[in-house]
Image: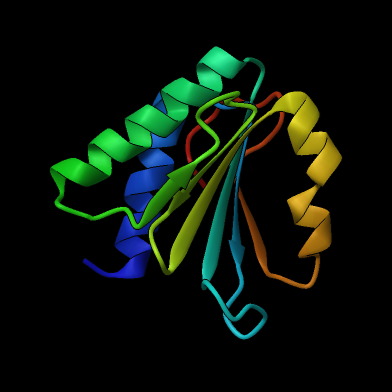
Length: 122
């Protein structure tokens, strides 16, 4: 499976759990440890966990192996590492504090779910 398919599967899985926002950052040429970030935010720790579990479940069904997972203890920021794609799932407060989209402002950005907008993936 190629990276674009992995991104689409992960985004679709996350959107099933209705994140507040879902953004793809293309880090190719900007980052040495990965090519893409998929960043989701949710209003509660419970929903953060649900999004992470749904993504992991859907990708495991397609036999896509996760390299690393962290952040489960408090679940304010769960990271799923799939090598070329790193998925960050934040609660609202942590998402605002760390502002990964601002830190990587030079990266091309694709909003898949906009804050407050519950429409289809774009």
